Image (cartoon, rainbow, N blue to C red; front, top):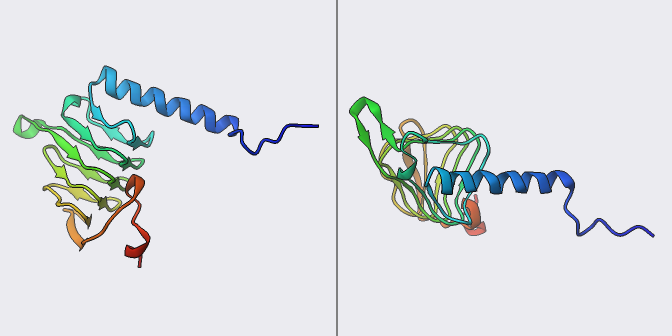
Length: 150
């Protein structure tokens, strides 16, 4: 009788989890980025390696593929700390400029360019990003909680 594979993750998922862990070790230990243990970063996301110590990502936040997080601005010869709060979601191809602080429970829409600080509990979108909704709550990895979905 064959053992049930119900509780065994597929081989591909195990490889993916291993790669994610290796990526996070590289970001934290080699580049010295301040990334919470429970944060997730997609493989296609680009984190600034010119000033990696300036990147701070809070617990249970998710950075989607293609997102760019900068911690320097060579045109103004500035290096700044870019902070992403707790339970945030940074959408596909969003750009977070150097020195920006994104509050807790924030969703950044896909393709947005965030040039200024974002307060807690809101959704921002556009170029430049503007607040389009306030008073929201998010759960793990920046997912909008059920009572705020419409």
